[in-house]
Amino acid sequence: MFQLAVLASGRGSNLKSIIDKLHLSNKNIKITCVISNKKEAKALKIAKKYKIPFYLIDENRYNEKEYEEKLIKTINLYNIDLIVLAGYMKILSPKFVNSFKDSIINIHPSLLPSFPGLHAQKQAIDYGVKISGCTVHYINNKVDAGPIIKQKAVKVEKQDDEASLSKKILKYEHQLLPATIELIAQGKVQINKYRTVSIKE
Image (tube, rainbow, N blue to C red; front, side):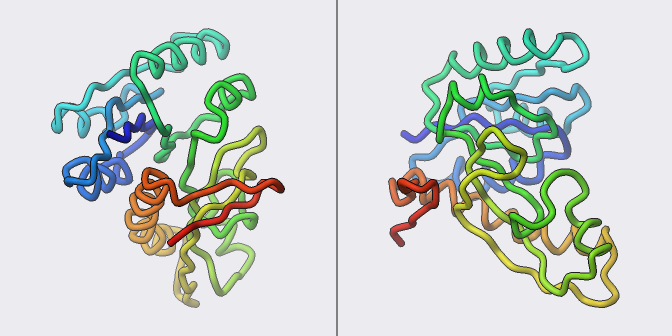
């Protein structure tokens, strides 16, 4: 069994896509815990609905050091193979990243390395790009700068604004993230010597 910890801060739509496409399938990939830093996160309600163990580690109750110590301790309650950041709006420290080296992935709503950080879709609209998309990448010690695993391009129409582009990209996030997790679970993703990624498909 390939076991996932999913970290989410918001509505949980990417969490739901992982549940639908992997957790409820016969692919031997299961979410063993869901963790959020926001008490209002809908992701926690989704985890509860599907009887997945869930934890609120409220970022407002702890300083940064305490928060990450509790996060690491919670993840270590389980035999986790991969940590998935699914709309997790908190930067992780080098200590955390190094504790789970090459075992943390993130989904980002742009074609990295373009438009890292917050409001990537707005950045794309403001810059006037004709193609945007989403990226699944490994986490390293820089924001949205880890090795790229898979990407999906999305055409930006002249009538698109931040909201409509976000909606278009999200549709593909829901496909790309579970597909990438499955490739990792199957042992088909390899980080090379120069920190690029090869996929055996």
